Every structure is written in structure tokens, then in C-alpha cells.
Length: 173
Image (cartoon, rainbow, N blue to C red):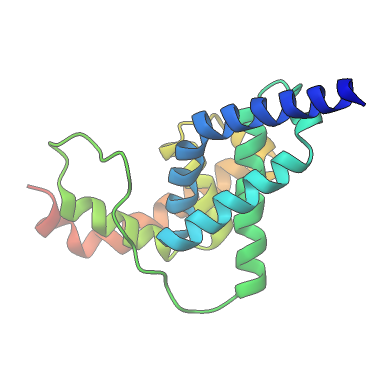
């Protein structure tokens, strides 16, 4: 009985350490995915709760951080499937601002255009370009083929360019 309690306490400590070190990155990804601060907090908490429930397996995974991102993206996609509303979330500022020389107006316009993309396209762009994941990593996390990731990324980037084109003269110096 004492050994089981020690093991459970050790697993809880390991998970708390993982959540402490990866929580901010998970939240940032959630915020980029959904565009809503409070929903990002909920998605992060839900993902961490699911990870905790199977921590005994997750901690032995090749990359617990990648596993956590996958769980987070699936929580987001599940939420979007259940919600299916036309309202757009209010975009709050994203933590860990870009370098100071980036134009804030351009960043806001880009995030607003990103919010208009379908959830899976948005997830592909966030993982590929904000999280700097490879095509194969993105495909694995979204359970898509690499070819599908490439096509979705191309179409989503084309759509972003079209949405931002009327504003580029006023946004880019």
C-alpha cells in the first residue's frame, strides 16, 4: 500500500512538473487556435486533465510535449464541432509578443484573418508556422496524411493572402 502511494505521489509530481514547464506553450497554442483567452484557458485545462488521466502512459511516450499538443488540438477541434456557430471570437493579445520591430496592426490583421479560417485549416497553419512543426509532425498530430497537410496549408495561405490583400498597403510600410 505504501509503495502504491509513493508511486502515485511521484507520478503526480512528474505531471505537475510537466504541466508547469509546458503549460504556457500549450496555452499559447490554444489561444492561436481559438482566438479567445478564456476558451484557450478551458482548452488547456481540459487537455491537461486528459493527459493527467493517462499520465502513466504519456510520460513514457517518445515526446510527451507532442502528445500534449495533439490532445490540445483534438480538444479544440471537438469544441468547434460541437459549437458550429458563425460568431467570431474576440482576439486578445497573444502572450510572448513577436519581436518589437513587427507591426502590431499587421499582427492584429493576420490574427483576425486567421480566425476566419475553418478550424482544421487554422490548426494546420498554427502548427506549421507558429509552432514551427514539420509537415509530418503536423500530419501526425492532426491525424491527416502529409499530402493533406500540404494542400490545406496551401489553400489556407492562399485564402489569408486574399483576405489581407486589400489591407496590405495600409499595413506594410
